[in-house]
Amino acid sequence: KMPSKMPSNAPSMIPTPLPASDPSAFPTISSPSPTLPLSPPPTQFPTSGSPDCAVAAYLPIPGKIEAESYCSMQGIIVSSGVVTQISNGDYLEFNINFTSSGSSAYTFAARVNSSTYSGQINLQVDGVSKLWLSVPHTNGSWNTIYANVHGLASGLHRVRVTMPQGGFDVDWIHFNVGTNKPPN
Image (cartoon, rainbow, N blue to C red):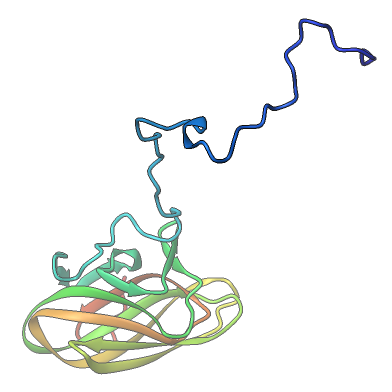
């Protein structure tokens, strides 16, 4: 039950108006107020990806590369170690060291999952399109797709994996020396 009358020793709940023309009537803060560091949502940026390909390490090929290990990207979301919710035009870039001597043929593979749509991957090396690969509708299961890619010279290169048609997830990519050699 609420009391009908406030006790006489209770503080007044009515604010006292301050004159608007007197700036000294407003408190000043002499030290900055503490701020909390802002951090991006954890699903937006991988911990292993570098923000700049100019300073990122070159990853040795043949071998597997986790998709979230990119050095540059557009529109990418990482969740639980997987690049997810890929939209049309998204891409991943990697610094790659093709260690096989001379110009060689490789098998390019990608671990993909598409519960709703099929999509496309375009593999570019140093700005030159080397491979188009269709991503099938996988009914929500992880599948490995692969195709042969020719004319990859040994040495340091920038590899871009573009998704002109999105709607799928990518866990990793893989390069094996030789043709028709998907990862084990």
